[in-house]
Length: 335
Image (cartoon, rainbow, N blue to C red; front, side, top):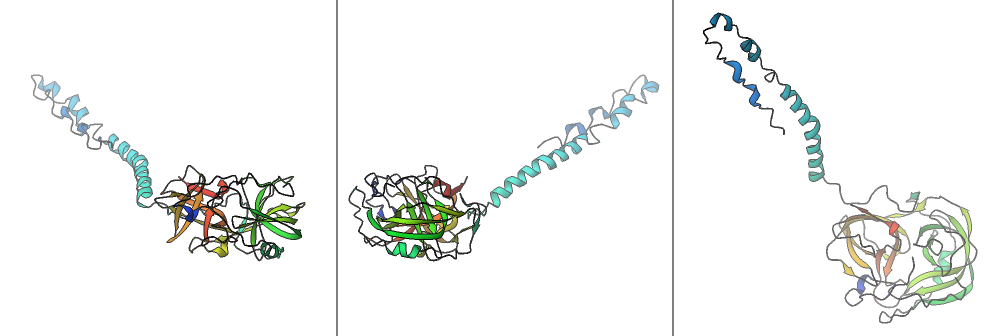
């Protein structure tokens, strides 16, 4: 996702905002009822015929009206049969469905089938050492002055560092520039200033050379790379079930899955983003998003990398993990 983000309302909201600086000045050195059941027709008014008391007694004693009307077609319940069938077939299922939905609502938890852009997922950790620990260690700590508008990402041109068979776990809004890779030891974001020849996809196993690193407001990033070699695709993407526990900084960069209800009183937290408290099985995590469709009370599922504010390589303030929808496809809202 493009990180051209202006400084938002930081005073009072800084506890859950990040990347509030503009990145426009970043130039990579590497150029990168019916009522008829009781029917009035059941009592026939013609049952007592005025013809029974008649000067024509012999003729009218056996009244066709008596014979006909004593057995009312309405008395043999056409209405009963019809209405019972109608009520049972139509009214009852409707009421049952309504009562079930009202009295037994679906629990607000993670959608079991939702994984966003990930086509295949696994809770088994990735077992390959791709050299990402060495890359991460090469990004030094750096300050983050939240009182300035300028980009404070600091570039570190380095000797080429080879990354061998890392797995792509997530992609940003621009999958030709922004993605996350992981190995058995760590996970790190790749954010490039120029497009790759083709987009990378979650589940690909790739190799590349890291040519430049950046500390962007405390967030370690690989910001220039050599040619990407795709070894295989559609591999299961490792993720962490985090619904019944608290997020920690050990989750930073790793894909997690959790879901729950957005609590009241969200706050602005940098640029055009809003921070919500997301309750999941008694735990509360911060969800940061620029979406205008979210509202307190919504039931959402998030599958994506864990971020933080400030970044873990920053030197200003305590670092707190949070979820950030840098890609809207990481979040599903149950309407």
